Amino acid sequence: MAAVLYGKEHLEVEPVALPDIADTDVLVRVRAALTCGTDVKVFRRGYHARMIVPPALFGHELAGDVVAVGEKVRGFAIGQRIVAANSAPCLECFYCRRGQENLCQDLLFNNGAYAEFIRIPARIVERNMYEIPEHVTYQDAALIEPLACVLRGLEETGVRPGDDVAVIGLGPIGLMFVRLARLAGARVIALGRRKTQLDRAARMGAAELLNTSSDADMVAAVRDLTGGRGVDSAIEAVGLPDTWQLAVRMVRRGGVVNFFGGCPNGSQIAMDTSLLHYSEITCKASFHHTPYHIRQALDTVSRGDITAGDFVNREEPLANLLEVMRHLMSHNGHLKTAIIP
Image 1 (cartoon, rainbow, N blue to C red):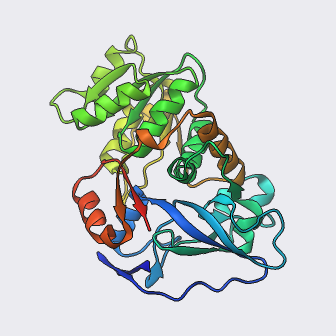
Image 2 (cartoon, rainbow, N blue to C red; image 1 turned 90 degrees about the vertical axis):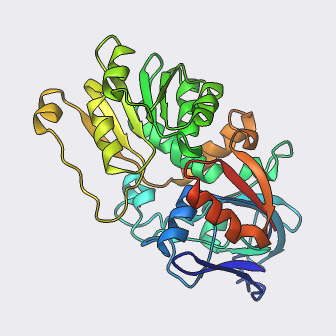
């Protein structure tokens, strides 16, 4: 059984053939697949321009057991517990040679985590698949793909000890930013719409909490908390033009904005050029991850800095995936669900 996406909000869990593997591939029995905000967006829109074109197998955060290996596979064996990323770069193109593997011109994506079995293609086996340490659970391991994206985003933002960092949006990604920024020694100001989100952010280490559903001026509130200056960096983890603009207005002179949340296709924003120029504000965007950050994410999970208990609030069988997606679509910002095939 596997989940197949056929189009906008059209998802079927149905029998599919057991994936064939080549002599450099690996077949994995999925033990845990985690829902993701990107998957919810893909379900709503019916496609993802770079990652998935229907009809296609669905899902990309997984951990499981090796049940078959190709004859030429080295370093993996039947019975091993593994976690595999959802992509692997070519390592040969213009961008890969410059250390920007996330922008690889031939970035190979792999979908199909919401299934009993998944084929891991050779390039991912070689560059982005790892054995799970004995003390790490399947659900903990399945967190490494989104965590790798966040680690890269934090690195790109240049967060340093003692910084004031605003995190806008407190879904699982925003909460990971809160936790990792705090571990990096920053003082975190968390901005979210719901009390439950703000409570979770406090548990992740946020020093200050701001409810964006109130009538308060969020820019003024952030500046009040930073002596009038504004934060050293603002991370937008929502993916809406309005919050992109909000992030720019709450950083200090010389500050950094990371537009981490992807807006709908065709979105545009207006920026105050005088503010950007005379305040020397740096605007960045972070997309995806690299093999280095996948390894770093596994190390982070292995140390216990990030655990599934903080981000996964329920388990559901594969048969209930459609119901889960509909629920997440109508409850934006909720935590992850572990799909257990």
